[in-house]
Length: 99
Image 1 (tube, rainbow, N blue to C red):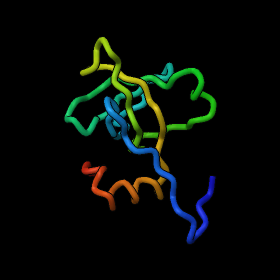
Image 2: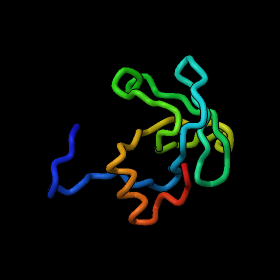
Image 3: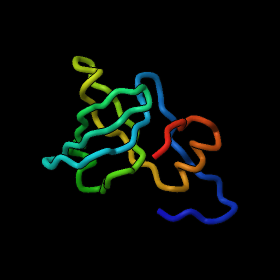
Image 4: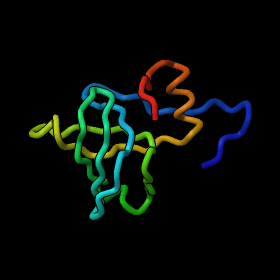
């Protein structure tokens, strides 16, 4: 998905219960360690429906949906943001973390 100049950038904003984070480490088996914007480290997984279509590396900005049960320690990856989307999030002051 490439962005053409002059075309508006579509960015999925964090909804209620979702938090932005930065991937700290890849742990294998579709698990990763994410430093979230609410100052919590979460063990996140890539859900099966996204596993083949989403390639995530360290330092990528992701949207995390914390689990209902262990919400402070675990979560699922909802989306990985592109560099263009990250710059929009920073401009709108939604992403306040440095990576």
